[in-house]
Image (cartoon, rainbow, N blue to C red):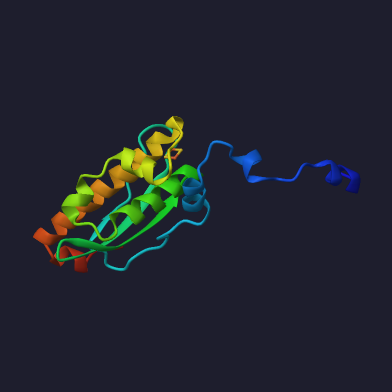
Length: 152
Ligand code: FES
């Protein structure tokens, strides 16, 4: 490639890359909130997506007095999965466990300013991960000693 070829390349603009993606989606996808892990989480899950993409989200919850005071996530997944993990953790912080259980995939899509229907399964994965992590929270409450032996 010569220098002239470079000059003819049109500048990469937000509109050229993602004409259909909202600012909220790009913020969550490109500068995600709450990435990371929590030691000895009160709730944890890492299910894989249903279907062929095989994406996975790890979700870590810190719960005090029935309220999710911290939530972190890690993922091996597409940009939409990264954005959904960021949106999910943003939505659940400060909510009670019961309120978090009532979230739907559409709430995650709304936090993102909309979601391509072809990627709604990324929001479904985030929601499935949340529900598994909340189940883990309830199981650990029933058997608190399990938390001490947790590998996470
Ligand atoms: Fe399958 Fe994101 S592409 S969960």
